[in-house]
Amino acid sequence: MQLKIQSCLTEPPSEISCFRDVTLFARTYIFDDVLVECPRGTRKLYWDWLKSRGAHDFISDLIREGEEPACYAIKANAPANIIVDRINYDNLQYIIGRLSSFRRFS
Image (cartoon, rainbow, N blue to C red):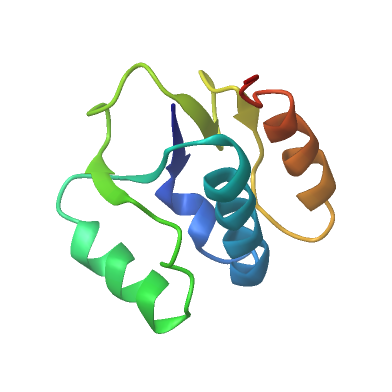
């Protein structure tokens, strides 16, 4: 299973530490891959942004918008499984709770 996160959710007003917590939880407990979905021509910019802030550890790949259609998604707009305008301490528990509902059963 894959989780796709819209790249704008890595930028302020999102908190980079909360973004990293979401990717850590998602990759460790639920999803095989965590992907960051970037607009065309911005992958290197987002990779450098995430790497310089230590938030790249649990990211499997950066993809162009629309590359992986059959994924669970966290986005700032529909369609998505989780719709938030930012990832911060105020909504971190909500996002983790929603991700927990996707947990694989073994």
